[in-house]
Image 1 (tube, rainbow, N blue to C red):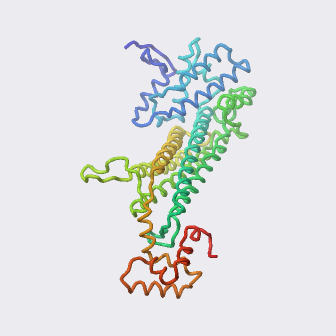
Image 2 (image 1 turned 180 degrees about the vertical axis):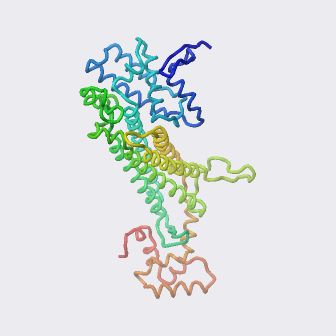
Image 3 (image 1 turned 90 degrees about the vertical axis):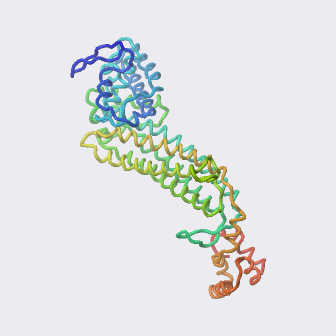
Length: 442
């Protein structure tokens, strides 16, 4: 393999001639031979957009020649669509990722462009990297919000379709008062509606960036004209409503905004876990039938398991674990920067992507859920708890008397017994889905 020699202040290093990165990336690949996730492709793309904005700013202010700036901008478009093997668990607050982009862009651009003096002009890892994380996260949140909206709509459709089916609620996994099956799915839809709104709104927490603050937020080495213009250029490149932080030192040192967003993602994960668990229980109880998607056992013929729900629940657990990682990373930053931004970025962007996949999986699966109306009716008609709906009309003592008398006879059809005792008109009216969901006694 042909090799070339490159130099940095640590010395010389041989690099394969055909690779597009340089000595800084080569050292990082050796220093961090860590299995597992590499730098997220969405972060690479966002960082390339940041580099474009910086080049546009330097070009407009005459700080970089038009030829060099245009070459850098064109190269950014070409490197942003490729994934690279650099570990997301790198040390150095993202410096390796920033230098990799600088080298990739410089090598793609040609024209004798220097990765630091030209591509990285008036930048520091500590302002471009967190800014890129926010850009990538905003794009991801917008995509996630759309997928959760579709999930919400799926469950609203099921709510409507199941509204006529009477069933029993459960408290502490024991039969409770009656309600329509559709009401259970309506509650799921409302939870997803909150998730949709929260994910849509929380991008506001990420729109304030520290681009132009350079190393610690003071803007040292960057012209004031550049600092005031670069965020405007980033708005043009990304199409996002970004703004420069009023206190760049704070925005460089503190990562609490990411924790706030992660908390919202964790709430969505919690809802997925709870609702998928409930769907498994409804399936086990025979009220609904989940679609069969694959054989469930290597030893038990014909067994089918709720594998989609289990997969979504595991995603929820992973997102909750990522929330802990994000919290830890944000809290362990020191003084004017956060050294653990690469792990934070990896966990945050992974959570956004995982929740989007989970929402798509669950929406597709839920569309094929079938109610077991016969079993719902059987459970409803045989449960003594339906007597609770009659308390406003017959009173507690009369209701108790009816239950005690029914227990002494050899019957299972409690609803039929009530019809004999109270009349069909009163029973059907009291136990109709409309009455059960009328919000209070009338």
